[in-house]
Structure formats: C-alpha cells, structure tokens
Image 1 (cartoon, helix red, strand yellow):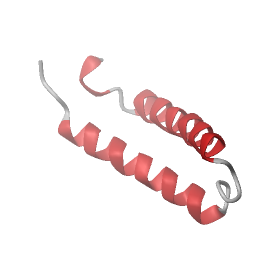
Image 2 (cartoon, one colour; image 1 turned 30 degrees about the horizontal axis):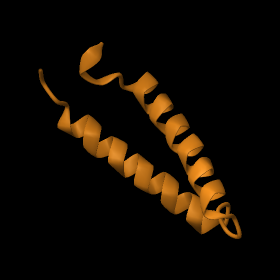
Image 3 (cartoon, one colour; image 1 turned 90 degrees about the vertical axis):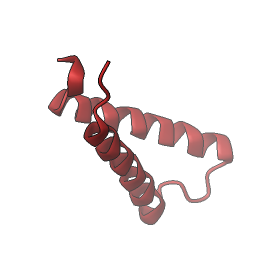
Length: 60
C-alpha cells in the first residue's frame, strides 16, 4: 500500500486555507461552538470532495 504524501499535504493545506478564509470572512463569528463545527465540517467535506474529484490520488 502506497501513501501519496503530496496529496495529503495539499489536502491539509486546503483545509487550513478553508478554515482561515472562514475565520477571516466572519462566517464563524458569533456562532455557538456546535454551529461552528457543523459549518466547518460541511465546508471541509465540500473542499475535500472537489479536490478528490480533480485529483483522485492513488486509488484511480
């Protein structure tokens, strides 16, 4: 089993950028902890889904 380190590094960078952009834009401001986590989970899932559609990694 091979692990694609570049894919993992880019995935992490995209998740960090998503979190940073949401914090910077104020989307998470004034939300409860649970609401913040829900919004972040949805955003993270969407970003990773799009990234994996563009670059499937080793599985394809």
